[in-house]
Image 1 (cartoon, helix red, strand yellow):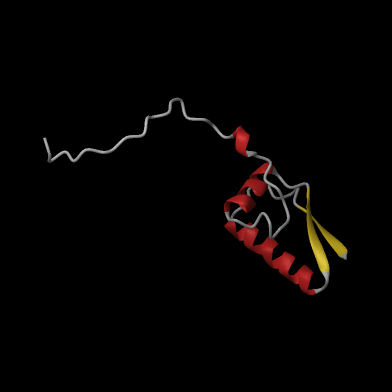
Image 2 (cartoon, one colour):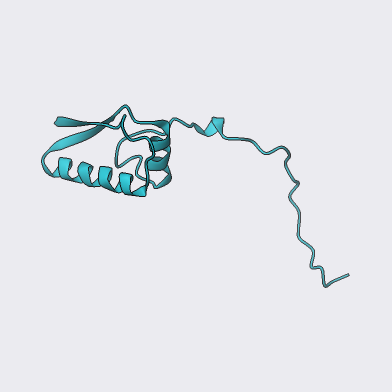
Length: 87
């Protein structure tokens, strides 16, 4: 399969419109029997692609891994909520 590289380096402030255009390019490339590859993709662009759920479609991986997510400061114990009207 032939591939087409899209240099994403100049994209400094990606928006939903940017993602829409990249997705449309990917669709056109596939229809022509090609694969779109993103080159020099900024972490913000990768996060936005992952956020809108197109990471697998555009075949990019978000750089942020699950273990890098912030952990809560404390864990609350599980229990039943009481009805405030019943005392």
